Image (tube, rainbow, N blue to C red; front, side, top):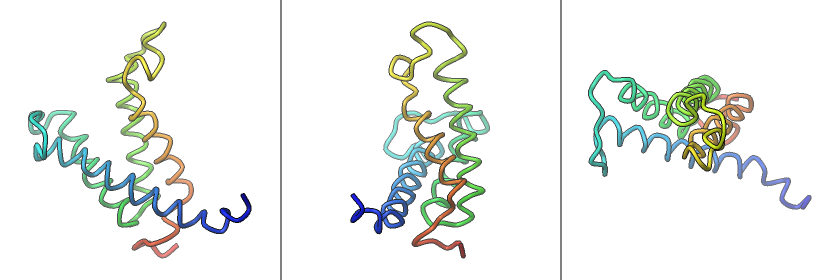
Length: 127
């Protein structure tokens, strides 16, 4: 396993790029209806979330102000999990596998990690 350790920055950079791309794509779906039939009303909370996802995803993908945008995106996903998936219900609805909140919860923690670590490789940031 020590052989893999020297590639940890590369693996992290790939994770940052992939997460940023996927998150930005979710935002493009909400804002522009890209490959989706669902389009929230302009100005609604979900549409504003889509703007955050689009801008934040692109910034994270490019490694631009990664810590700031990752922190914002982490908070957005924490709110999305609590408000739209968990809804503060006890019992089985508490579990992400039941309330379909796995992706929101995973994004929240991945972006929190990125906010702590920064962009590292292949980025516009000068870290």
